[in-house]
Image (cartoon, rainbow, N blue to C red; front, side, top):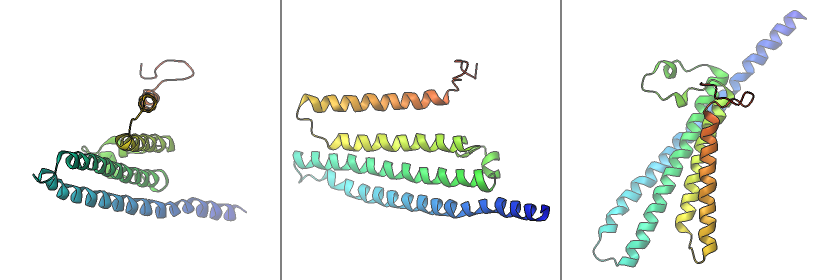
Length: 186
């Protein structure tokens, strides 16, 4: 029975390596989204020269400006989504496969990419996802038409809720200890 148990535990422990499929898929997806966002940015910059054309009128120029701002927001959204995929891939690898030695000893690397627990991964992903949602809100706020005061009130409420979400996300990382009520850093 002991040989069986040892063999089973070895197989069980080795089964964690199946996560490498998710790591590779997430990494490739992130690279793909980086590529798409970069191509979008490139073509947006090419069309930027049309904005300076003297043959377009003021209304058309305003429409182009609005379109450019929307495209910039979409590009930022794409880069944020690619970042989520990269953080997810690195986090899964560190949690299930092995620590990334290069990340630990790198002086230029941000510690946001070093994942020590599932809570670290969730925290980092949730912050980037929150930023994506803020960018999406901004994208919709740009294209909205504010015909009546209630529309402006909805916009203000949305901005207030975004501020609250940002406040709560930063308050959660400050080390507040819910049992003692004191900050654990001093």
